[in-house]
Length: 123
Image (cartoon, rainbow, N blue to C red; front, side, top):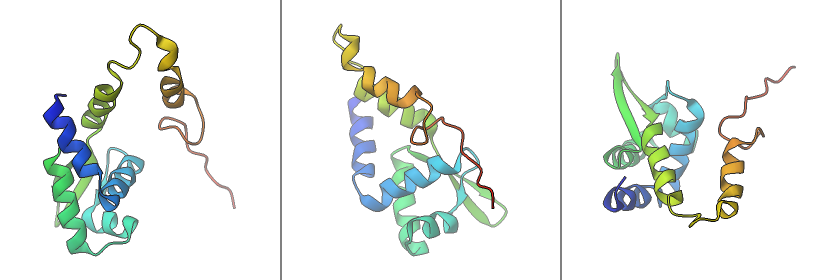
């Protein structure tokens, strides 16, 4: 990822609704969500959702596909990973202990990390 792409991605994420949409789509997984479900997830009108999703798609943070009569959006995990890599690429400067907390946060199994298995509630 180059600087211009990173700036575009951060600009798109710098708005509360768009950030919430990306987080909702990350939680939804690779199957994504229909545009209406994204709107519901972040409590905005469908027209507002379309406006924000278009901005996120232009920045490469989400992808869309047509399924029947719906447009389904999903997070662009490769772009999001590249954005994290862009931020962290030069963090250590030969001192890996500097980056250890960030690496640990992504790899430690806990309910707040991206790769932790979700608990299934009973009841």
